[in-house]
Image (cartoon, rainbow, N blue to C red; front, top):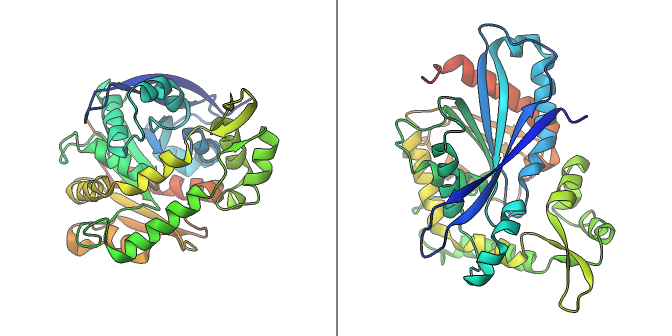
Length: 350
């Protein structure tokens, strides 16, 4: 039996930037059962987790399974807090959301959905009241940080709907570090990323061949087996080619994936939001100690205290950029400790 039960809701994203209203699927996880009774003094915590580019909300499940096991099995942790639920909102061009939006995207000739639109969906999820008066800690990975932070721009920085933020392997930089898409060093890196993505397959005759392909290529070859199996289940869809032949393809197309690297404004505004939130909530950063993908100058920029971005803590896990995918159990253990630290040093939100 799964260690958690799930509920799925569909959020209507308001029209924006000449785009029609789109759908965002959010999945809520709650523990199927608890082996320990939360103490009277323990805080009830809700988490919100954001996935990365061309990934799925369900790829957090191996982390959540280990996280609940760690917290429930540790008497000291369970005296401090209890995780009552975890919300995973989905980028509207990914997973179930993409399938719901497919006909509208085709009809309106929508070639890509910016992370700022995802942010509007995240804001709508908060505004619908599912997380009203709850102690929410947000955990976001890679470009998921941009989606979350653009969503938090819809709220006052001094009264955000979260009590803390854990930023994992972000792609964040300010205008001083990367002043334009033509910035030489950044353009070279982005061009390499785009060429690499365009060279990857996105269709296969069947799921077995898709698995064989992905397990032999980066980044999927480095992922924990449980995360890869989740991606194979939720990130691919059975469909037909132009000749009516059955095929399997990625739900998030390579074209959609590469388009995400061309929007610098959402990155700038996301880091501006980190600066705005910094005086009011603790913000933690988690990096992969073996990462060679994201430039160190970007990471230094995101955690630059002289620019008003003083982290509450910076932690590293022995992994590459895909920390959550490569080391879900190690990340879950670190997350359990960070939540305890947040709970110990923050007041309950009224």
